[in-house]
Image (cartoon, rainbow, N blue to C red):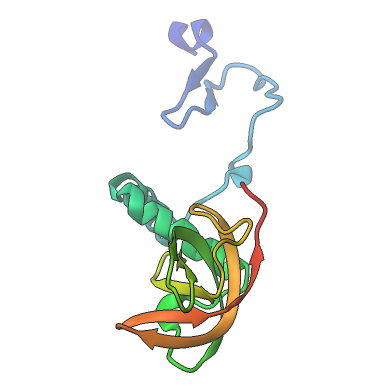
Length: 166
């Protein structure tokens, strides 16, 4: 035995574990993880999580909002608006961007643009001037047959369900 080992019975390795110098019995170590207890992340998992972090850091606020709206729409069972085709009966969920009352002498209309993160569907209520709860920023799920007017997807007189404000 040399003098250095008697003065320092324990040393830390680079990994932070204790290494016994060999002089006498090894000291008891309670509360430390064993080598088999450590959680190991695979290379693919670390790449995916790093990619997600980088996307969140570099994405604009509008892109992040669109991702969240698409996720919420999928959770509520809504069809993505970009996949809606003319003539289909669909259920779409999203947030109302704009609500416009168009006063016409023969038929007033209330129009609202529903955005789900992928595309916009215009909801049109014929003969209505105001509907309680239909206001910009409100989340809702609408169901009806898709039509196309001026190259825009439209649902006339949709069934709708307002979601509670968040």
